[in-house]
Length: 262
Image (cartoon, rainbow, N blue to C red; front, side, top):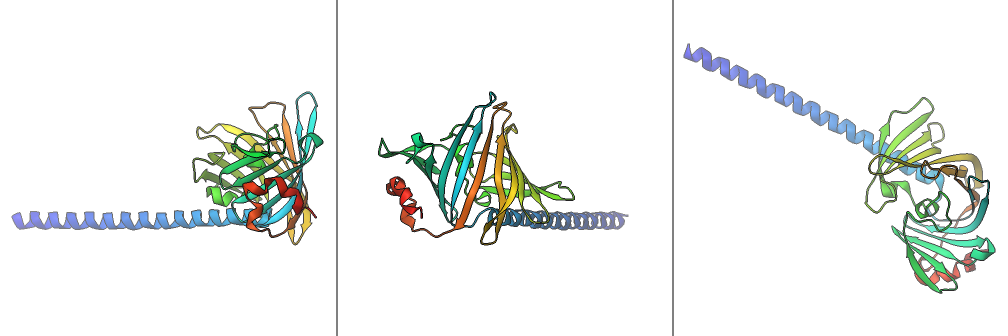
């Protein structure tokens, strides 16, 4: 009888070990599937970056801020970008702002005012133009450099990605992004705080051919529940691939950005 009890215990232990092995294999398989999906989501995010802008370019943009009473204020900028972490911007209009410039190197940002002849530090959540766009929106680098992506439930026509900030210095803790499945074009971004509060919505509209094979939305409209009745528009007038020397993206060059215009 003792032998039978021992044999039963051994059988039970073997069954238990077999079940644990199966559970471990299933868990490992689930991790592989999750990792593959995460890789696919981040691959799509990089593709979105590539479809939005060349890695290095020059562009002319207009920003229009609309207030609830109908008042408007317009700005025009000449913008240059190099690689994944450098962008600079020169004010062209209004005349009162002409000659000002901004520079972003990674997460560090500066504003240059000719009368002061000295760059001053600014933050991503401030706005050099007022309105709903902040500095991070205006001097956007590449989403894939700042965020990790996961697929959310999409639709028949659109992918939806949930983005989580890689660093604490990123302007928004979370983003939700809508992308067309056919042409991989960005259509909408919702920006959220760490607590899950919606901060603003950005809608990407009016696809336009800019040359060099680039087709992208020419208008970005943004609005926020925090600024009821206010809207801001960013209009891309020109975009062109162009290479620049490293010295262009330095504090010493901020007062000479106008020399780059052809």
